[in-house]
Length: 423
Image 1 (tube, rainbow, N blue to C red):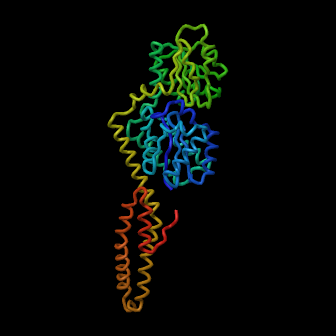
Image 2 (cartoon, helix red, strand yellow):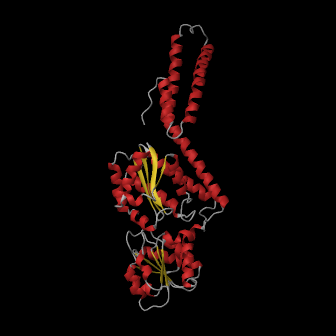
Image 3 (cartoon, one colour):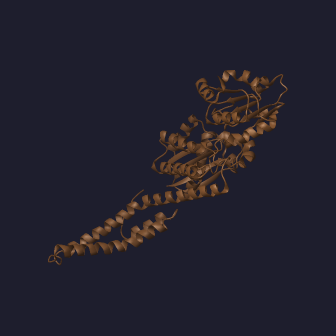
């Protein structure tokens, strides 16, 4: 079995396709059941975020794995395979590990170093484990990815500016409204992205801020931390009527803010309103763009603006990539050692058995030796065997690259009359 990563991301897909593929918790449960019923998928983890939807699988081969994971992705979300033809990418074996390590480090994000992705990678593994879809191999892969992400954040400044993502949208808002000072803001949602939005808006000296959320308790908790007002979604219409700026960042599966709601709230107004939709799937109905004096911006609109605001220098990015490369090598060597360990153990056992057999065969010839002399003979015999086996073992480790380990291991096992341990 080998790792295969299959998916789409902000690099090649529009938000419309990303939101069609986005998985809710219920969708994940169903998808993992599909994976469990497919004999071609040994293990699987689905990573669904604002910027990407990827499935990582432990599969028997590239071709079979590609078709199986693509079918899982399409059938789980009801998306025709043809819609994925252009933006779909895949990474196999070590390339899959390198890709995931880069993702966990924030190097593949729309805003380099954005802070949420590392926790999202961890959470994706937890969900897969809870559904019984993640076994030892893919768990090891994701743990190594998380370690890589932590190192990048600890040893470089990549990700040192966690509100960079929100900053891009806030600047667009400032341009649309002629600045944000004194403006009235409504923030829909009470999660991490909403908290970042409130924090950044405060830095820009906005006026009143009202936080609305389906859970009133969560809205109250965030409001108390940020000196804001709060309410539930039942207050949405009244709050919108007096708002200059609206930021929506919920985890809802469907539309939260419809065109009709905005039109009704905007009735009779002449002052402009800026709406920033940071959610995937989108919170705001796209047709709201047609409302006069309302400017709506979403993830797609942030691409170019955000891409030039990486929270790291070129030197930091080089160092981060070096950490990824180092961790990929570390992961590879550990996996290679684990894969070859049974064969190497069998080789050494065979060597020990040969020594013991020869000592028994010459037992009568060694009978007159003193204990020290006998010990020296035994050490000599074992040393010769160890030296003979050393070079084949070293060469086996060196030659066991991706896709070749079975070939060399089987050849060595056949030459020495050993049975290759089953995986």
